Image (tube, rainbow, N blue to C red):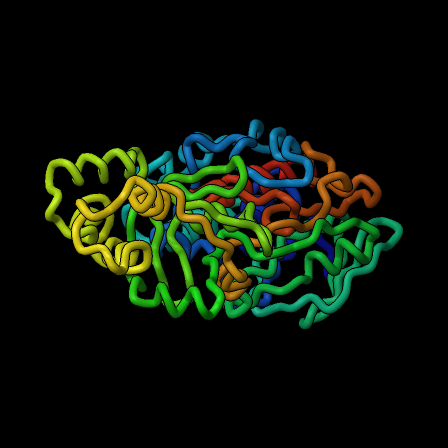
Length: 393
């Protein structure tokens, strides 16, 4: 049986980062993954350009049952540390918006960089290799693989969550955690488009493909970014962000004209251009198709803005600045960028990511109950948690 100091399950962002750091410390490291290629989520992220970090990453950008858990790892390995690595490899990048950093070229540059670092650190990578079982021994762990058995002193679970099953995502990491008595915080799709019920979908289907800037809110949480009407419901950055907070039965509130007092604008138009059609006035605030639909639904019998009472203008303004509705669900793990929930952070050491009750067992990256906002935060958690575990294994 082959023996390694460290076996890492998962050749994604967190797993490769952990392997690199452990290898640098002179540890013998084996990384295994059932996929044909490493870093598949890296490859497809950011439209193929990889939003590899966010310059403003802090614990305020993450959801967890313990909101402060990620603080230690994020302080130990910061965005500037990963940026320095990217720059050392001469990978050109740019800030798109809100601190989001993307490669100028292909996301494959990030994967190549990590593979080069792994090779330099003496890490062994084996792809198309499945995990059949894990057992705890006297001096470590025995892992049964589809290719045979290996033994290790430290086992790192970096297998990701359930999101995007067509890429091979499974619940393996949660199964291993349960096997060793660790609690799992309920998992659900996050950073995912939201869907409408049939009646609402029929009404709003004509808007499919329309995009606009919006403030989308759930409770006290607000995000101002792009929103997109789809043939299933709503998508776009603002919707993906709020989806991590939304639960079935909850309302979503949308301001489709941020920074504009729609009621004041409508009253001004009623005085200044009284003969204008309601849809025409609304189209100065909203995309034409959205304006037409609101006008048809709210004032079907009113031809001009002059014919609208204050009460009617109030309804129109609410439809613009405070559209409130209940999504029926989400598109699920099929399109979710990440998985919310995961291995309970109460069971892990925040500095090393080691299971408190199982020495030598580590959980890093998406499998842990730490979920970032859209915009490079989840990659930063992968780098930070992987780096932190790599200093300890």
